[in-house]
Each structure stands twice: as structure tokens, then as C-alpha cells.
Image (cartoon, rainbow, N blue to C red; front, side, top):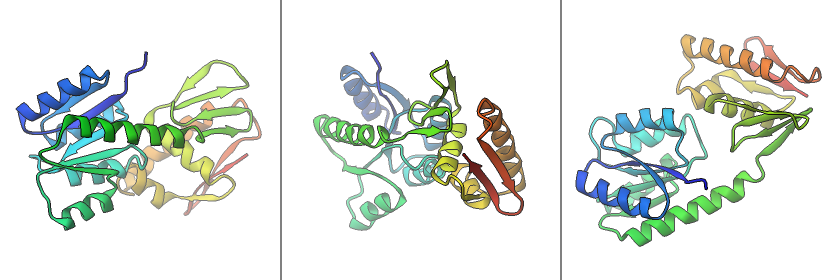
Length: 226
């Protein structure tokens, strides 16, 4: 049975352990980090399905961490935990891209209800994200490609997100700078070269259908033709 993986970033050891153990008794898999930098590394390597972020953390606070993650992934659910009660803090949390906001102290039951609500909402959204690309079926939530019912090809997190944006802009130019800032965090030379490598990998994974092309539109970006 699949267990939902939650990344919990909380720098208070006792509270972090209580939340972790409570969620694990409800069949969640919990990755606990005690600062924002560790949380970002864990997010990038473990691909959690939901984030619970304390706002006040060392090295990288919850708001900064959320901004970094939103530059990579605009759909993962984020819940902020905070002792702050000012309206402007709540507004900032939602503006950054948070989906929910829980003020300390809170009950575990309330946190679990909010987690389940967000996961259910995300599940409904993701059912519409199985896309057809020529002879390929692209399952964006599962990050897989399948050619005419053959074996699944697993995509990396970044390959899947890049392909998703190409498909959503099918037969139109996908702005290079825009997608670099969204998925890589900035559009410098090294990230641009990295994106070229990912485009080459996607071309190879889609090469069984000759009607599919990813064109390099010099000076502008890329265009998926199908």
C-alpha cells in the first residue's frame, strides 16, 4: 500500500518528533529536517508529496524555502506552521504559494484534517494531468511515459516538469527565460546548458514517434510539435 511522503521542516526537536510520530501512526511516511537548507536538499532528493514547513527556522526560513521550492514545483501542497499571528504574515505565506497556514499551538487532529484535505484536492487535480503526446501517454503525477501500451519509462522530477510545460504550450514557443526561472531558479548560462541537456534527453525518450519534435527556436526557447 502506498504511503504518502511528507517533508516536515521543524527546528524545535520535541515538537518535530511529536508531529512526525503522530503522522506516522496515520500511515504517512515523514521526512523530518531541523533547518531550511536540509529541507531543500531532502525535497530535491526524496520527492515528497506534501510539505509542512515551520516559518522560523535557522539557515533558511520557511518562507524562503517555499519560494525556492515554488521555483521548481508550482503544484506541491505546502502548509506553514508558525507562532506568528499577524495578518501580514498570513498574507505573505499565501502570496509566496502556501496552500494552508496553521498557527501554533495547534492540535494534531487539525493538522491531519488539513493535510488530508490538501491531498484529496491535489488528487482530483492530478487525474486530469494524464496527457497524450502522439503515441505516448504521459502521466505527469507518476512521472512516466508509455509508448502504445509498452513498458513505462520513468522520468526524473525535472524532466517531467519540463515536458509538462512543453505539452501545455504544444505548438507554441515555450519562453526559455521563463521556464529556466521557474524550474532552475534563474536563467544564467550554466542553467541554460543544463536545460539543453534535459531537452536532448526528452527527445531521446520520445523518439519512437516520428511526428513528435522539440524544436530549438533560437533566441526564444523551445516548441513541442505534435
